[in-house]
Image 1 (spheres, helix red, strand yellow):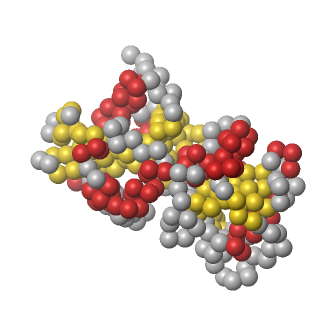
Image 2 (cartoon, one colour; image 1 turned 135 degrees about the horizontal axis):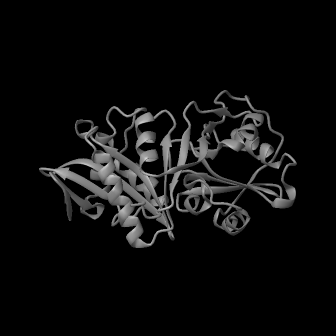
Image 3 (cartoon, helix red, strand yellow; image 1 turned 30 degrees about the horizontal axis):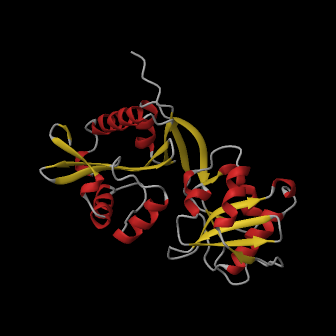
Length: 281
C-alpha cells in the first residue's frame, strides 16, 4: 500500500471484477465517448488482454475509489489498458503523479516498454502522455460489416477450424508487434472460432461478446496481395452477422477493409509507447 496524499493506493487484488467494472465506469464519467462495463464483460475482456491484478492500481480517498490503472502484460511487454480519474479529481496534477508511479514500477520490474492507446479526440489525455514521454507509434481504426442483408456478396467459401492451430503461423509471420487487441495471443484467450478460406487465408473470430469480433486475420506470406484477405473478409461478413473489429486495426489496412465492403468506425485511436528510459536530470 502506498499513498499520494490524501490518496491511498492498493493493487487490484483487493477488488473483484464487479467492483473493478463499477470503479472503471464511474471514473470514465464524462469521457470523450460514453462508457459502461459490467463485471462479466470486464473479466472476459481484460483476462484475454493479459490482466495483471498485482500490477494494476486503485487510488482511493476515505475508502472511495477515485482513480484506477488497469495493467496487462505479455512477457516483458506491459500495457496500460485503462487509466481514468474521477471527474472531481481531475485537473489537479494527479494524472502526472500517477503515471510517474506506473512508469517507475515498470522500470523496477525490468519491463521492456509501456504501451497504451488513447482516443484521437482526447486532447487532454494526449497532452498528458506527450508530457510524460510517450511517443506515437500508429493510428488504429475500427470496421464493421454492413448490417443490411446481402450488402456484401461473396462467392468465397469458409470452413471452421481450431483457432489454436492458427496461432503458430500467425505469430511467426508477424514482422513487428501487432496492436494488443488484435494480437493472436489474445484472440485464443477468448471463446473464439477459427475460419479458413482455402489454404492461404485464416481468421479468428471472438464469440464472447454481443456480436462477433474479428480478432486476427492472416494470409500466408507467399499468397499475399492476391485478394485472399479481401475475399475472406467478404465471406466473414456473410457468415457472421454483425461482425466488427475493435478499434485496433492499423490505419494502413483501411483500404483492405473498405474494398471488402466493410464500414469504418468514426472513432480512431493512437498507439503510444514509452521506452522506460530514465528521465534526464
